[in-house]
Each structure stands twice: as structure tokens, then as C-alpha cells.
Amino acid sequence: MERKLLYFLVISSVVLLLVLEISGSSAEPQILHPIVLVPGDGGSQVEAKLNKTQRVHFICSYTSDWFDLWLNLEQMVPEIVDCWVDNMKLKYNNKTRRTYDNDGVTTRVPGFGNTTTVEWLDKSQRSFSLYFANIVKHLLPLGYERGVNIFGAPYDFRRAAHEHEEYFAKVKVLVEDAYSMNSNTSVLLLCHSMGSPMMLYFLQRQPQAWKDVYIRGLLTLAGVWGGTARALKVFAVGDNLGAWLLNEKKLMWEQRTSSSLAWLMPQEGFWSEGEILVQTEAKNYSRANFNEFFLDLNEPDGAMMQEDTKDLLPGLKPPGVEVFCIHGNGVNTTERLVYAKGEFPGSDPSTIIKGDGDGTVNIRSLLGCTRWDGQQKQKVHHHILPGLDHLQTLKEDGPAEFVASLVNEANFQLWHKNSRNYESQANPSDNTENLEVDDDDEMLPVIHIV
Image (cartoon, rainbow, N blue to C red; front, side, top):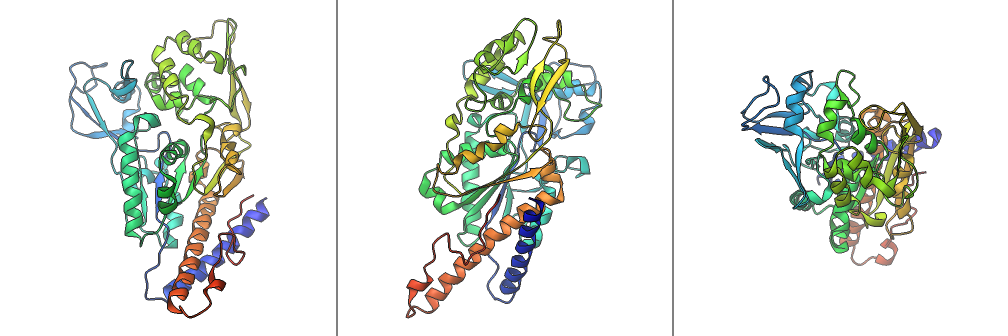
């Protein structure tokens, strides 16, 4: 496997040099497939403005101008984190079945169309907040330029796809603008984690004729196609986001208000109705009784949000575009929570049974993209990066180089196609039948991932 990957990278690098040499000798500007970066859960910056009449702690502010809410380590220190939770959490309306900012809080997601706010989660751009920056670093040498042919599409990750009508309308305009700005060249959607089902949801709602024109492909890293068992742990006891100084119980009260977390619960078709996910002395919980799980946590809103989101991607229908699906495996990943007597609810489970995955998403969910092979006419490519966890797919150089190689090959195919069209137009008297090459022409460097 490693030898095949190395061979692929070497060949792609040679192809890149040839393309750059050829394009550099031409008076015409180099045309590349534009890229739109779509982050996952926690992968967008969030700003807030306060106008409160109440506060949860005397050190919290009543009012403020716009400030960084996520990611902002200054807001995460003990005591102040109580202010952050109150500002970050959402309110659920069981009549409209939608979430809203907490009372006295207005939030916004900055930088739509820009890559900066998805390259780094903290405006200081310190290493701990790196997100898409390493990927972008490896794309720039291919000829990419921020705001010209590579863009960002951040969104409020606290909310599931059905609450993002305005966002998806903006994504469609961004794709069409990127297409027009780059000589009518189709766009690559490059997604991480929850950004992958977000774009699947978007693509399923676009006409095939639109996708055929505007979308070159869907390139996903660590896509959460069928949910994750870890979502139950977050609902039950919270998640400290890998930072030992943070109190996961305090963060839990914010995390439970996110409809996106409910969307990431284990999905039908990936977990059976009877497979036990949470085991306690009094009762076991599976997909069959998620409602009881939430009620026993005293979270009726969670039960309704899970009901709202469970059928957003029924049957995981294919996107209708070429797919490049990349993820890790071989990392211990939560499969089941086992509570001893008196632990549930309120305490950490004494035992967490682990299985295969990327440390965040179970392998069965990561493999969801492979179901589309044969379900759509467009190709589905799949590649596993052994031993890489959920965020390493963004932070390590190996995956970034691999992504750059895939993008480079797509661009070489574009160059090859454009050169054939140019030759055909320049020599109309020639026998054009010999110039007609279908998508599987062996003359092209075939993108084939194993």
C-alpha cells in the first residue's frame, strides 16, 4: 500500500512539472479547477456580540462589540468558560423545530468566500488552531491563489444541514462565481468531516444538469457518512476537545444544544436497531430507543433534534458527481459506553469499548462513500490512510501531498482536454474522429485509488 502511494505521488509530481513547464511556455494563463474548502464540526470561526440582561457569573459581560467566540482560548479558562458556554449554546424551539442564539447573544460566521477563517480557527494563527492551512500550503505551488481559484465556505457548525438554507444558497453562488472567474472551469469541493455530509446534502438538492456543468468532483477527508458512536458519549458526558485543562462536563451543556451533534448520532443502515451502544445496569440503549436515552438524560430537546435530523440523508443516496473519498483507520474509536451501577446518568462510563475507525468516526461510517460505487455513473475513488486519526488527515504532510496530487491530476486532465479542443479548433480540416476520446482514455493519467 505504501509503495503504491509513493509511486502515485512520484508520478503525479512528474506530471505536475510537465504541466507547469508547458503552461509556463504559453501566453495563456494557467487554468485550474477552482476549489471550495468546506470545514467540519468545529472547523469555522464564530464571532459574537452581547446585549444581555442576565449573566451566569459576575465576571461575564452584559454587553460587547463583536468578539471571537470560537476558537478563543482566553474564553476557555476555568470560570470564564461558564461565560463561553452561555454565549455559545443554542436554544431549541419545539414549535419551529429550529435552534436560535441564546438570549442576548448574536453570532455570525466570518470570512465566507475567504480561506483564512478555515485555514486557522484562531485569528492568531497559532499552531494549535491549524485547520485547512496545511492543505492550502500544498496547493499553492500548483498555481492556486487565495480568492482567485481557492475559496472557503465556513458555516455555523452547531446547526445541522436542514438549518442552513441561506448557507447553501451562498455556496451555490460561490461555486458559480468561481466557475465564471476561472474561464468556465468546474469546481472541486474539498471537505473535511461533517463538511462531507453537508456537501452531500447540498448536491442531492441540485439538478444533475447543474452538477454536470459546475462540479468537477467531491473530495472528502474523514467524512462522517453514517454518524458516529462518539456522539452518544458527547451527549452523555461531554467532550473536552482533547484539551486536558477543559472541563468536559461544562462543555457538555453547550454541546447538547447543537442540532449538528444530534445529526451525527449513529444512522440507520450503519447500525442495526438492536445493536447496543450504551449499556447500563437498568437499561441498554440502541437506535431503537434513542428517545429514551435522551429522556433519561433529561434532554427532551435532544430527542426532538435527533428526530429532526435522522432522515436528512435517507439511504445515503449518491451525490451524482465524481467522488474522491479519503480517510484513516486503525485508530481506537468509541463503539459502546458501559456504565457500572450508579454511574448513569451523570458520571463517566467505567468502560468504553473501542473498535476500528479514525479515533472520532467509526470505520463503518467512514466507508459509507464506497456504497456509491455502481450506484452512479460517475466514478468513486477510495483510499485509506492507515493509522491516521481524524485531524491528522488535515495536519500531516502525507495526506496533504496526496490531496495535492489528486488535484494536480484533475488539472492535468483538464489541460489535456483543453489542448485537444484547441487542436480541433485550430485544424478543422483534420479528421476530428481521432481526437474524440472518452473519459476512460488510457492516454490520460488515470486517477485510480486503491
